[in-house]
Amino acid sequence: MTETNNKEIDLIELYQKILVFVSRKILIFTIFILIGLLFGTAYYYKKSNIVKTDYLIEVSDISKKIIYNLTDKIKFSVETQNFEVLNQNLKLDNDILRDIQRINIDTTSNILNLSIISSSKKTVLPFTQALVKYYNQQKYILEKHEKKINETKDLLGKIEEEIESINKMQNLFLSENRNSNVTINQIDGSHSEKLRLYKMKQKCEEILSEEQLIKLINKDNNVVRNNYSLLKILITSIFISILFAFVYFFIQFSIALKNKA
Image (cartoon, rainbow, N blue to C red; front, side, top):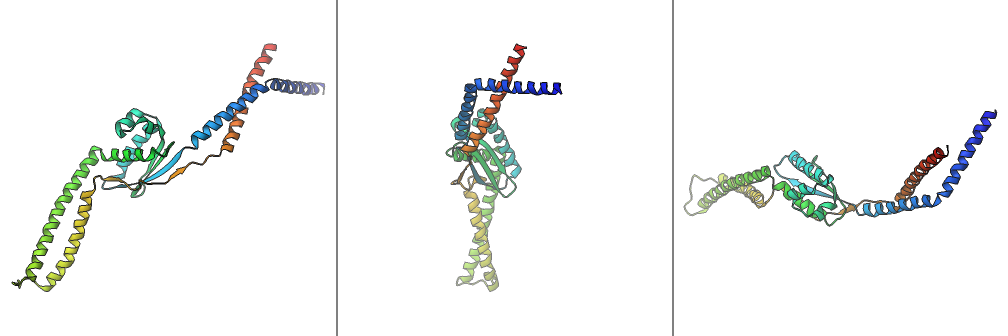
């Protein structure tokens, strides 16, 4: 019974010593809290400027896996802040590249979704445009585009020859010297065929007008800011600073007890 009382007395004395020690260190305790508040405020203003933007990218005749792999290379360089590689590939100033925090691309649908997180909304579009240009400048994609253009030109030439042939037949039928070999049914069928060829011609001309296989669809996109609560961040900062303060006091108190012993 006496041993138990002694243990209780020892614990009370230890508790009193801790309170006296902490009360003497109240200034240091306050400094820890102030430092925590300063760090919390700085963290809030840094994070409150972070914006997220989604862009849609249209890919024509190119495997989405290729685009994913190209993006993954840039993504790694962004996360590691490897400005040398980014400058080499995107040809952008470091001031723009420093603002880009993370990038990600979703290739699960026909239209690719590119997400960019940046500390400035002004740098998002220049970065995205440079990234799309980087895609299109790859040797494989350039060769693919050139091949598509050449094939389209050949097809367009054949379509124009067919249209010219139909025009001659229709003009011959309507002329004074009608060819008995041309029937009304052939003329009727030629109208629908001519319409189909004109649609194909229009599509070919649209392809030839495309300067790139990979295109950025929505240049004027809405920017979404990340929502951060200043109050929550400050409360968390105070809590963490108090923990650090108690760890600091515990170390000092342990050293003081050891020296007295």
